[in-house]
Image 1 (cartoon, helix red, strand yellow):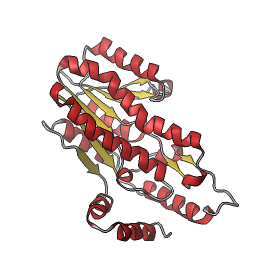
Image 2: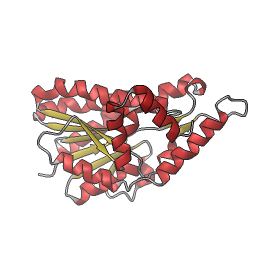
Image 3: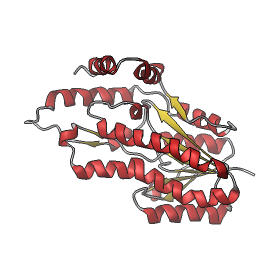
Image 4: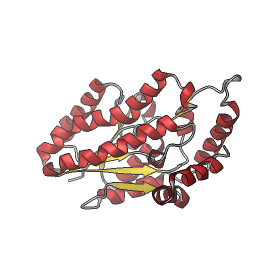
Length: 267
């Protein structure tokens, strides 16, 4: 029997690549989007789901269970970028980012757990970010929301072990997707004390995404994890130096690591 997979944010970027890869491997895949009508040519089914609206989460999960009778794998991929000087990002945008990147995934997890517990089996992969391992300048809110999801996964894993439900984090680096177009960018204000460093950092971030890895690298990594009997707590996927930056943070003195980051961003 083909395993049934739910991928939030499965209409583009990393989610789409994972969905197409798993479909080719014989899995029954359901992706989600706030506007599924725009993706009628998708290789797999796209359901209506907005991670900020609990009722749409419940409806999508129940539709899958009604059609398939089971739900084996959840890939929490839906997310949103946000950039800007923390001082200048409106509170509403900070809260909206956490609604998408933190509270949204938690609510999707809550929606699938009763079925997975009933099956006495399930796998949940939370797509986080290498940025979630460090506070990056002008990406501090994004780092915080993804880092929070990394930590809550650690706790969730231990709570779910007795039900034979497994959970892991998969942290990508920069991939060549359309994420930059969907980010919230705090405006570059002419009278802002951050105008030049923020503008330069924004250009550097966009260059990193444009030069990023092929998102099918993430699809291959997810497939490999799904075929692992005991997934690790954390996985990192991306360019060597991006993954190595996490190792450096662990072993270097805080101030030296901070200096390296500031040199990288030319601050």
